[in-house]
Amino acid sequence: MGSKNKSVSSSEKSQGGKDKVKKDKKDHSEKKDVDVFINEEQASKIIKSSKVITIQDLARQANVKISTANAFLKKSVVQGTVKKVGGFSGHYIYQPISQ
Image (cartoon, rainbow, N blue to C red; front, side, top):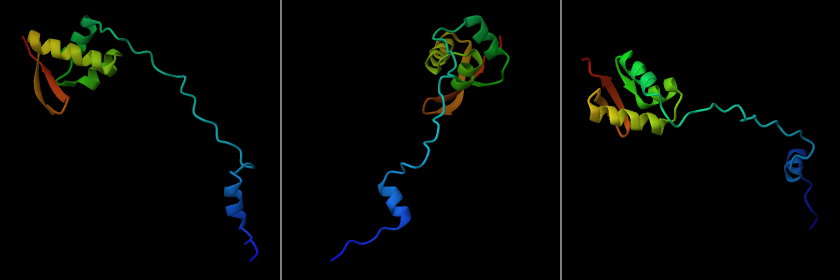
């Protein structure tokens, strides 16, 4: 029995596409600088200026990590400056308490 001649497309696949030019990968060097510490005055202004806020909103507006924003909002709930009004599974919605 003789060997079967492969089609052009299958022979290119077996060669690994050596003739094709590799696509340029996206450059991920343009990462944002995010802070680990939150400016409490700035965060308080952000919270008071909005009707409701989520952890993700606070993190994006204050330019901090989500874990930092989460810790700040939990501390604010204990202090009584905000209250949890909705959400589930870690995606909670907070509302500032007007004083």
